[in-house]
Length: 329
Image (cartoon, rainbow, N blue to C red; front, side, top):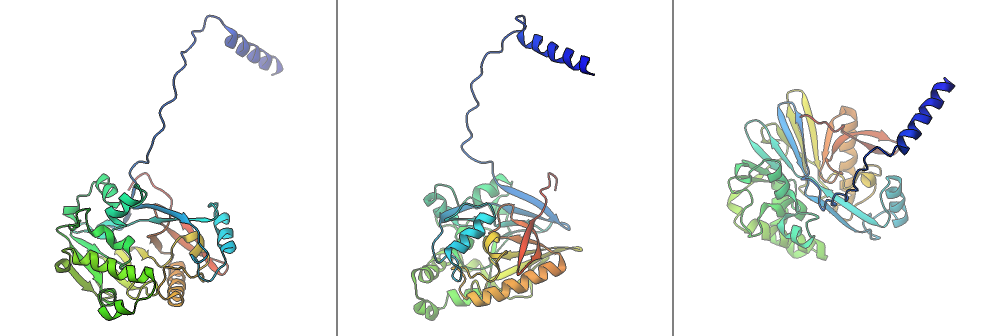
């Protein structure tokens, strides 16, 4: 064995030193890519196809009030534990296109073209990524909105303030519509964020969309196999959905939690964007206990892309287990 090893080493050295081997010319490095490939991911729920379409990621400094009832040091510790950088937050956005086999359904629409321009393309990518995924907005039959925050409704309009889905019926939660379209509620709104929310909702729906809007009630199907489920607290009419086909289901949680490394792990933490934080917490715990008990797949609007997986109980909170990526549908 030792003899063979010596011979092999000697042969390798001689080969390396051989003057008869042609020298390959040095090649310049390939140019660096300057953007990601279009971000979309497909999976099946029974006979329905779910297409998660990235709207991008918004990164901003972590303030003292992002989590209302936890100190910044605690939030930073949670970020570090998840191998995320301290002192900043990166929030993901993942609207859906669901092909039920008979209808093409969009669930929430992302930050819109205005945000795409102002963020230099970091968010507002839903339209371009949807097109890259092979979907024509004119072919969309139904747009279902979970609630009226800008990152869910602004993509209803193009850069020219025309309907982005010109042939689609727009379905909105009845409770949400009643709240944001109430002049009395608007007059009582305090704080820049809430006042801005009222103005933005009216801007979006006044731009030629009101005739297309149909309010929907909870505990009813808003599209084939898509059940609307009350999950209030984040906003008064905040809605989640259960997509069912055959024996398969996925829970589309909308904004029941924000980034899972903070709010799945710590369901008692209160997000600054939750309108009624205590109610949002109660909803979060109820939903996640159900997901654990039923071992149901969950799709999260603010989960890291492709934004779906399963949850398990973990101490006083929960843990997100990302669904395995599949190269086939």
